[in-house]
Length: 126
Image (cartoon, rainbow, N blue to C red; front, side, top):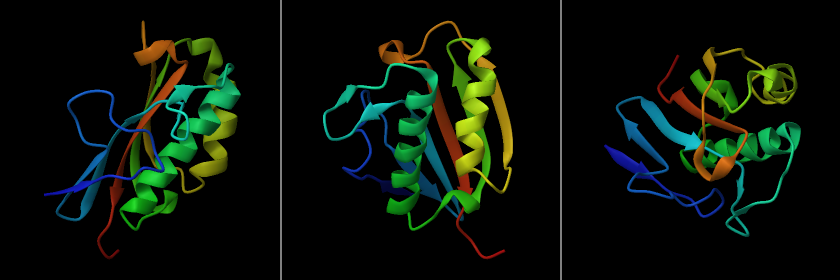
């Protein structure tokens, strides 16, 4: 297994890695809308927060020499299911290959954010 770490995405806020490569797969920890430059959540609405989350996911993918097109599964967490449509508008701009996905509303997310996304990407040859 290989740990993936980049300063272009937020540092882990607990005892975990940003991502792990195991075999031909990248397993990325959930990303929340922390701005890696400041270490804080700056965005206030679901659209802005989803954009920051997708950028953070992209930086982790890039650190593993991958991109959004290699993502085979996402798990998305929303603080409010009423944000589903607005979240999907942002999500669709990044995950154009339509990977498998779960999307659920949860009671709380770290730092009181509105969304979190984790991904699994295939790094091997098709």
